[in-house]
Length: 84
Picture 1 (cartoon, one colour):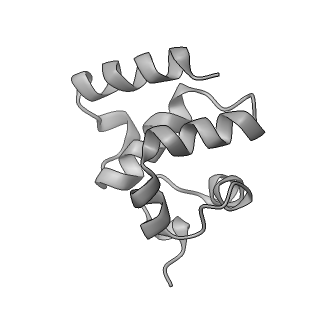
Picture 2 (cartoon, helix red, strand yellow):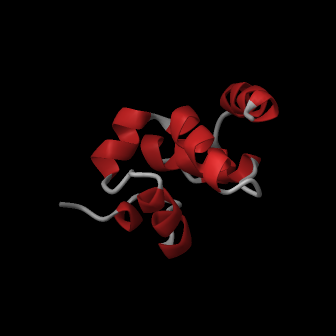
């Protein structure tokens, strides 16, 4: 079983948060998707922000979070604005 920290952008702190909401492997994160994982985190950790969503998307797509395409960032920002 791979660790979440084996994914790009995922450090120890975000791994702990993801595990606390039931996402424990890279496969689970990929199956959950960045948007749903973000909402799960936001419910438990209200201070989670747009950068976390970018980080999750980058982890799933193997992209540095600051290198996501503009259209993806725009879509994710829209999700972030309406989440909780």
